[in-house]
Image (cartoon, rainbow, N blue to C red):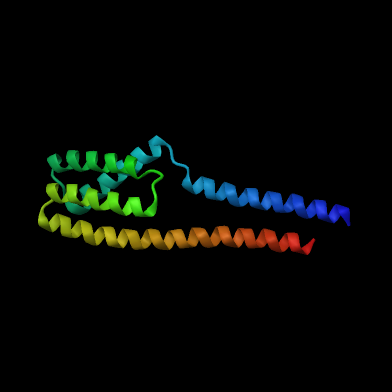
Length: 137
C-alpha cells in the first residue's frame, strides 16, 4: 500500500514536470529568436506588400523594436503595442499596402489563435493522460 502511494506521488511529480517543460519550451525565447522573428516578419511583409527598399529598412527597424518590446508582456499590453506599431507602419506604407497588411494580419492572427488552442489542448491531454495513469495505480 505504501509503495503504491510512493509510486503515485513519483508519477504525479514527473507528470507535472512534463507539463511545465512543455509550457516552458513554448514560452522561452532568446534575443536571437526575437530578432529572427522580426526578420522573418519583414521578409514576409516585403514579399506580400511589395515594399520598396526604403520601406524595407524602416519596416525592419519597426518590427525589431516592437518584437523586443512585446517579449513577455501581458495580452493587454500586447494589444496596445500592436496598435502603436500599426500607427508607425501606417506612416510608411501606402494606403493599399496598409489595407493589405491589415487583411494579412487578421488571417495570421486567426491562424495563431488556432495553433495556440491546439497547443493548449495537447498540454491538457498530456496532463490528463498522466492523471489517468496515476489513477490506475
